[in-house]
Picture 1 (cartoon, rainbow, N blue to C red):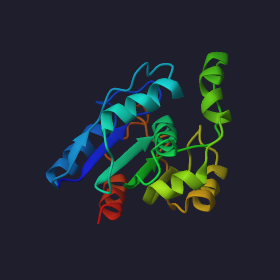
Picture 2: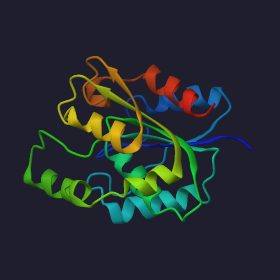
Picture 3: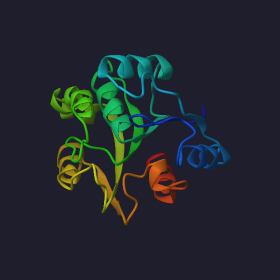
Picture 4: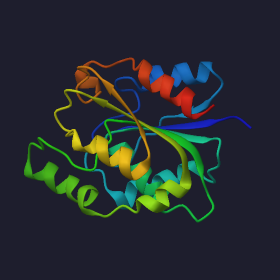
Length: 191
């Protein structure tokens, strides 16, 4: 059975942005089945729409199912994992600029959109039961993701943490069109 990868973009992003097309092509070249779906209402992402959409897209997950998330896409994957039925498990995930707290939200609308993602509790124990391997990639100059997020991923989710230098929020706006660290991380978790 082929290994499936779902690349989940972030807030107000789209599947053809930044490094997503590059990573999709590199993974397909290595034999993975890769989907980069357009998430619903990306300008105002909501837990109650993103998680069911992801569940429908994935169907029945297994240990040959892997995820790559960017920013709020990481949150969506975590919340999807939290609600998987007991006994279901995925092979692993790679999170790029994942977060549990945010800095530098510009407007009241952004703060309101982020609030449910920031304030709705996450059951780390359930997530740990449903994921085999997790690697999280951060940038040392991300304006939105404070450094304390790294410790939470390490301590609560046993994640391996990688720090990239001067990659901002790893977005298309940061001109990140290739992300070799993400490719290497996917290959590591899928061995």
